[in-house]
Length: 179
Image (cartoon, rainbow, N blue to C red):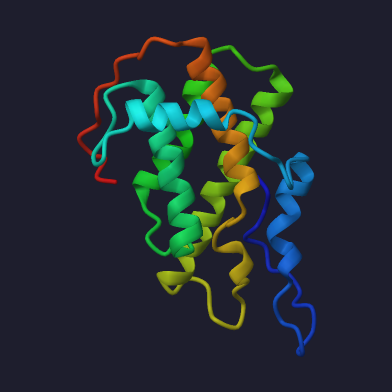
């Protein structure tokens, strides 16, 4: 989708890392620097619907839990532990928000592309850590998106979903999810 896997030219031998590379997608989506607008709703979901461990038993809680797992893996670990659970989270969040029909097409498009970018970064990190991308070709700025704006944008969409569905929607945990 965003072709983050294509080889990019390094800036220069003196400055081999292009820090702006990380922002290409959020700039394209127009959400760089986004400030969360529904923090109180997210805090309420987290406090009331997300358990201290394991999957939530409500869809609202599980959506936010999964997003925060994605954020934590990127920001805390640089996606070094990326696996099929994280990849599944990206698709699950996108599909549930889309199914809700709460968002205009342009807004939903941004949400889906943001989640796709998170997934592409995770895959890139996994490929590097599996030895598929050599050290001399790797762009470490593509391992993980670590600024809050992207995650806050998606969190706000989850908050809007929760605000439009104030009663917890039952969610049955998936056996294959271990994160």
